[in-house]
Length: 494
Image 1 (cartoon, rainbow, N blue to C red):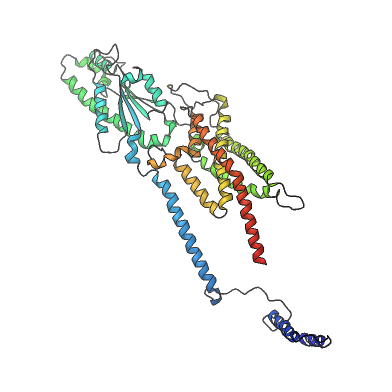
Image 2 (cartoon, rainbow, N blue to C red):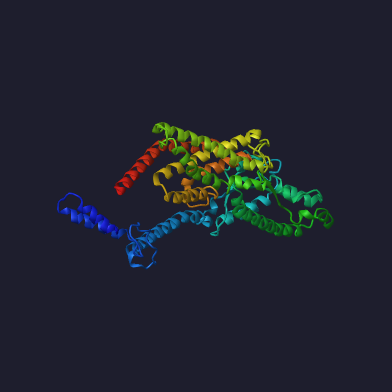
């Protein structure tokens, strides 16, 4: 007996129902027909829709929707990339115009201090004249500033201290006896005369090794060559016109004729060893990335406390406290792991501190306690960077958090790894950005530089406080957004 015949016989044995019954029977027959599949078989459910070609007419509406959304998303991403990456490119856009903001002190002690005041200076006036001529040049140049010895209590060591205190990027000092010793060497044939004793150049490479190597030292070295060349020509002419000095005397001190003068280099804090580079530059990008991705790793673990799976859910305010506390502990351990990498690769962390005017290789600001301070800088920096990521992730959600990460990395890197003095003034907000203060504090600690670590920690703690205050609000927003999406999904099913 067929399926339809079976139904007809059962229908005839039932009491007579209203006229709607035949229509109901027809509906059942229609449902049976719908359950048929290709091949004429009956009673089996229809399988999944068969794949069709991209240009199938049935996909026309969906195809247009896909094209529209694809174009919109591409336009959004392209616009975002142009806007955010432009911030990275533009940080170096006005370097040539702003290079004069890198101040170089020129301090002429030549013949200015007893017992050399009776000597008519030659070296100092020539150097001052050349640097002042450069200042009037329209070409890109360093910002040479002529300073009086009295500004430093007539003490060349105070000039070094000013450079160490980051009041200037470098200093050219013409020593008080520069001309006197040179004249004496020529007149007496002083074989021990050292031309490098005439002048000195002082700088602190560890302050920003890239700025020094790219902009400051090349120009200073070029200036020194020009000075020695110009002074050598002038000095030889004077000697040749002086008939009182014998050739025998001149042969005893040939260095007093050529090069006559030179420059001693005093790099108060060299940037070394090379393994320190990641600790204060590119390695800090991973501090941002680690703090960002910790949200995705830890959130499923936290959610187990409020999803009732065989247990009562945790009170929401306690859930917020737990999340914040667990995040702080996680940041502490993760920042320790990050800090230990530098220690593992033998970056110096236990050298004693030295006075700022002394040339020193690898001094540390806090002696044996330097590593702990370095860890705390990374820890507080990770909180400042990471809590911002946590809050934004709860507000914008996927996939927009990826755009936030790009923005957060670009803005922090652009204002931390490049000198803000060389960037357009637009970027001065970078002084308040977290990574800039992490970099500055790390350099201070690792290289024993002039300290602004109190200011650095203050800025970072302010970021931590603001993001901590926003954290509960963002948690409530995330819960509200999640509940709304669940209601929408339930309504769609019904």
